[in-house]
Image (tube, rainbow, N blue to C red):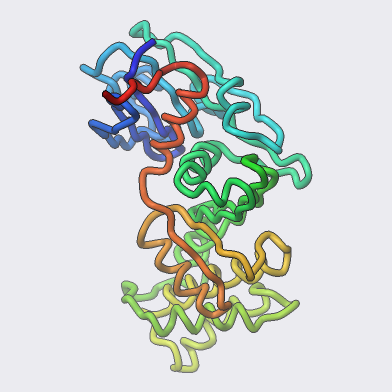
Amino acid sequence: MTTQLIGLDWGSTHLRAYRFGERGLVEEVRTLSCGIRELPAGGFAEAFMQAVREWPQVPVLACGMVGSRNGWLEVPYLDTPTRTDRLAAALKPFTAPDGRTVHLVPGLRDPGRPDVMRGEETQVAGVLAQFPAASHRGQLLLPGTHSKWVTVRDGAITGFATVMTGELYGLLSRHSILGASLPPAVDDDAAFRRGAATARDSGAAGVLSRVFSARTLMLDGTLAPASVADYLSGLLIGDELRVALAAGWIDAREPLLMVGDAALCSRYLKAAEAYGLQLTRAPDATTARGLWLIAVEAGLVTTRATA
């Protein structure tokens, strides 16, 4: 058994490769714009070779959309509740063109909604390793194009919900009347906070009853055209938080762990102030940590004892 590993976080738009040394230390990272929707002419095999070229012949563990229906090889979802050991037991191996064995991490399915995730389960594994208290009873937010709200009980992901906040923002700001023919956006903290407060105060009607205000406020002259994007961002992120509270996905009396892009997380932290929520941002590289932990659980690698 080896003490080294190659980990791949392979999503829709990007591929991030990690070369692990002993004890799970990341020694090199490569980031390629070779997501499953942006593959080179040689397809998955060529993208894989670019990611691991000249790296040692060691086990490869991959998570994310690479295991989806449109990925390199489909891996069935596991239903919640699921712990790290169950993920490790369900890895799907296959042989890459260069002879390496690639092991794919299955995604998760919450049958109660239904809802699905691929890649986030590995992030959560990494987060829980760094916050043991959250393993017993935790609530996590993974903001992004498709935000995930995750519930953890006794070390298992017991349920989750997806909110398409990032994608909706892109559609409304670039392809709707709200963002049409506007000047380049400026960073307007006040406009963002106003949007978050507007979402908070929308009550049972929700943000759909207020989203057109991004245009009417501009027409009234109370919102600068270059500030519409920040107002709209605050409105949508604020509504995501409102929905999470109303639906019972989170308990406002308990801390909420958040993991994701630093700039995006800072927006959620600002919007959370309007609701009095306690958000704690988890450290970066949680996916890399999760990959290593799953590999150890699966017996792909062993951590060498420290002298």
